[in-house]
Length: 290
View 1: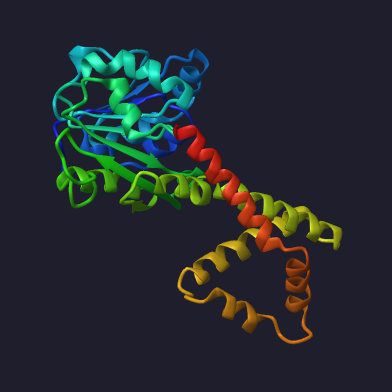
View 2: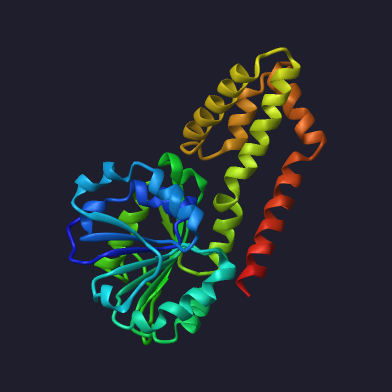
């Protein structure tokens, strides 16, 4: 990413913000500010070896409050607080962001319409909603993105509509995985239900497989290694297979072990259970967006 003259502000520095910070290209910014009010969290952050990032061309500072004197028109703000805190945080920063070009929010369920309303003076800003997932910690996340431009813009803000800013947003989030720009904000509810909540689904399945392996006599450490690598390998292989159902048939030899297991999945309607679970997550995401 080309160097900018601006600063990058994290408002809130929980686990997801920390994962983003650690993997982003810090050399692109003059300074990076981690704004956190929680005293214990500040202590936790200060215990980390932040010095290992300082040689990347920017200086990182942990502060408790954002002040107007620190902002300029090239700065970027990332809202990384809980959805229940977003309204009050926006009220605090709205006098400060009139000339900022870009505001990014990772608060689940808080729409760009709400953000515009809460910020009130953000008519000239680009606002992006991002839905990353827990895999940011290992650099293997996928992040759903949707953005809106200044008042009067006819198209959603994205990698094309926002030109340089769109590319800059993509680079922030590709630093820890892949990105998916959506054309409609409502699609973020689907992204939330699939990839946002998805790691927990996979962990649930992993845990069941590990328990089953233990029941069969394997040590838990060996079982976890087997299960984790199988899921990693299947995911890498599966992303390039157009018809997964046919692939399941190929792997399920007649009268073999895989066929026996798949038949139980079908008997118990596992596919229906998974679809019901995802639909419940999708419904809840839509409820949170109202």
